Image (cartoon, rainbow, N blue to C red; front, side, top):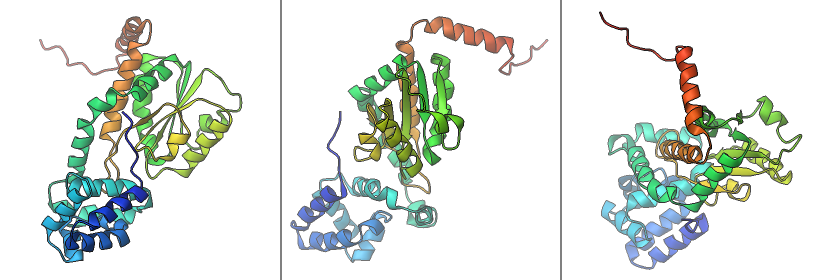
Length: 290
């Protein structure tokens, strides 16, 4: 189900509303409004120390804003300012108090995975599987960190259907795709923070050429939302030196399974692939003991 996008504007409106509930919350709100980018890197205790209030006050402020607690608050804030982060700033997760407490990255990934059942029931996921299954040529596209997901998706999707290709910057497909538009082609892009400009520009060109584009991205205010249809929003975890993609990988595996269910002759294809692997001795086998 598509939920209302939270933007920095609505976040600041929530901060302003929480400020009206108590004098301490007003004090916290004033700091967060001015230093929201810095606050996105802070633990509850660090934020409390910076403002001069108790850690419990930070938790109560988070709840007053409508969040379940500080973890929910800071996770939302991180998502809003993530594209502004530079890698050196994220070293805070290595040497600060973040590293000594219960790992927020693991907590984020657990929450992301727990949300997948609802996401898998979303109509956007079914539309993605149908679009991939019906396309004769599927171009899996991405740039920088987003492109690391593509080999996994291509390897398994190719076992289900023909016509799967990969496009990343400086590859032949990236450079030449769209010169002779094919209505039976589908581009499936992974567009995650920090939203590579090369990828966004490439997708904008395809859209101008009326080439069908589908996309996975992390939120409904992503630049991919206006460049693709269908769009599947799946969260990535950001509480680490680098983003983590556990939920997207699991979702891709699920969608490939849905594509397989829509593909005629799947059993025969899988049997033929297995026979080829056996003939080529593709896998290690334990030697027979005598």
